[in-house]
Image (cartoon, rainbow, N blue to C red; front, side, top):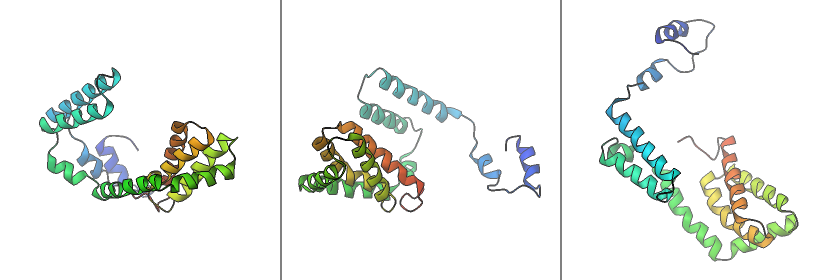
Length: 190
């Protein structure tokens, strides 16, 4: 529904209308652009220019923009700490060594060999489908980030073994991990 605040308030009381969320919620979120908003837009534009012309690597552009947001007091460190999903940071920090261990122990190569033997070396499309299905199934019961970190070394080894582009296979892992959003089990709203 769209309209003025007064029209929304009148329609909220209509008996044939089911109100999912009070119009007061978005009304409280609306605010003027202000000085901080203009600074944020300028910083975003500067970051886009840096990225568009390739003046610095993307990581550096992002860090410069984040640093500028803090230095110009567009956001405060306390706000950043409160908004940070610490459970996800800890989860990713704990799963990166697991992903490395899967690769270095040879488990990724062994699982990739089984996967390639299952679908055959001659069919890169079947390999991609198998990886997407594996990640989607695993992502239905485990976090999508965890699934991507666990399956990525296996997918890289399978791509190498089958002679398929590694970037293509990693994109399949990303698509399969995104499919976990289809279920409410593994991906909580953050």
